[in-house]
Image 1: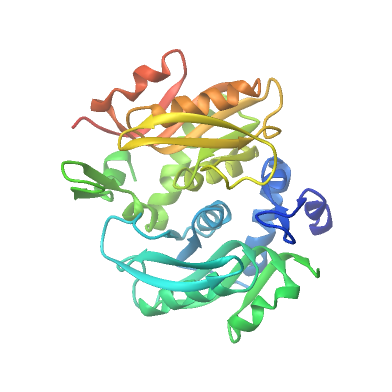
Image 2: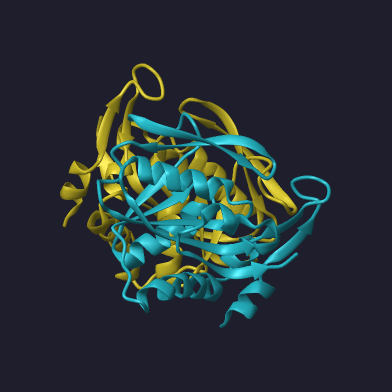
Length: 177
Length: 177
């Protein structure tokens, strides 16, 4: 099973969440056990084949948790949930960001990452890059080292990569329009 | 690493999300790579040692996604996200439930599970059982077979198990008060 086959399992839904947006629905890929495992293995393999490992995998609530948790398991790394405001019970850092459909913010426990730890940021989708850039800032505020950003899907035409200049960005499935 | 060691990694936070509630914060366990892997392996092993397998693992947004995704990966099963209202882009079933801190509802894509598929429902926490019972109803409305419910933590004193009578319920870490 290759990337192109995975792409065929993604459902395209016009006008969601609002008119003019073409939504790439990954639930149809997730629901296929072979595809789910292949996608996780390919993301892992990208780093593993270069001998790269991570101390923590940090992912954005909530779809990001899906691939983030699988990758943390495979790397033997800890998993760090980056959450919507008000969800975390202990002392947390907050970071605002602009996204495709408005403004929002994320929080992460301030003791979630130790100084110098190698961190992989993982989310399902790289769109404008706003959420990913906020995740980078959160990790760096804890003096963690962002050694990679992994995405299942990249909407290349939104140029999210430009917001992540200087970081190692990898996406499995690219959409040009 | 055994269950008791995992339990020591869970942080207890009084009065969250409101006064009088003792919150079991799993982020301190998740952040420990060895503990994360051990917990996922123990949950998987409970079923695997009996030769049980599943076609789908269904989990509740958003903390449920973490262990649900790891278990889906390990079983080679598809992953079905059960989401908060308005998040899913295609035709979905909705189910209301009462929870410890109020009312809410969940949605799942109506084509997420096929008739007769064996489903494991997985969440981080079994409390009053309201969310788990709602997940059971959603799976059964699609004619899926709920062959197991797995939880990282069970708050035994809230008697959630009683709402799940007749189902195979397994939890890794139990709290009696």
